[in-house]
Length: 458
Image 1 (cartoon, rainbow, N blue to C red):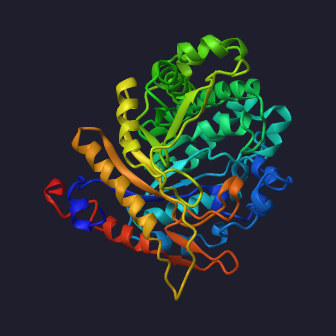
Image 2 (cartoon, rainbow, N blue to C red):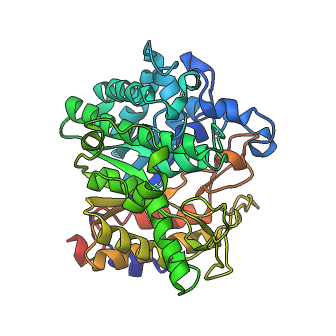
């Protein structure tokens, strides 16, 4: 599975290998140079929300170690870096004055990537909403979509000439359902009504953001990053198959439908439409605009059965048994074929543009022993999913690149610092970075591209 040249020979010579991070998870410097709090700063400091009340005040201190971290990325030999831009650094109150020092930081970041010949893939929103916007309702308030549009225009006007690609949002499933319905992520709401309002506001913001990107930099490759669910029915019964279809509508169709078809799924609307905010004239046209690319973040599949209780709310599912027992240290099932099933299903359902795997990786918490981190299970996980990606390319799917999650261990949201996804180990006491076994292997593979060592790259 991990034989380097065999895997490389199955990927096209122009395949992009990269690494990915997010601002709140690595930057730290939460009060530096005009940055003001995000919803995650507040959430992290509330008892019982984040493991150990860990927060992002220091994180990986990337804000103060930018050049060294860019050198680290370059040393891995990757061709792309996917990072996010912190809205609270750019427009600290969400609306109002622009903070030039925040823009200066990302100027230095993007210029540093250009000097190192690394493609810059920027994500405009990776969950760190300026806290001040919660006073107006945050993502449940339509006004936030227009605040996001202005923030987007500000960023693209400043950085767009040097970006290779931009995504409007990272994993709206998380910032909608996980954050407003399940209460696991900031702002910690547990309300279907709040979640449905956040859903439409987020989708509207995406469309307004695409418009802002096109107006500022018409040639910039613009897209969005999803974490779509590969959903398997718990059994072959009609009830469980129907449950899987409802789950597809809820977890995938509620996002893909408006963006690629200009409509919410019919089953979704028939069950929940009366609780949605007003869909104003022109909203769906704004949301549905051609995209240049889309990103898929994949880690683990979902298994569902029908929830037959009288109080069950759409999609009316419960968890079903997994296919395999093997799991990562965070408890997620390892099943690489699900990535292939997911890409095939989504492309059969929607007319999708070219695709990047914008996140894929595994949580394993091995430490440094004698200067080495032997994380063979992570290496095996990445290799297995790259093998599935090669299968998809052979079948004709336009898979253009792969970004390992994550460049380095970091703040893992509600799990704090106890869960490690990096291909580089971070000692949070000293901030020393140690490339893991998986990182060394990934680096060796990445160095074979973009030219490749095989006929496909000729």
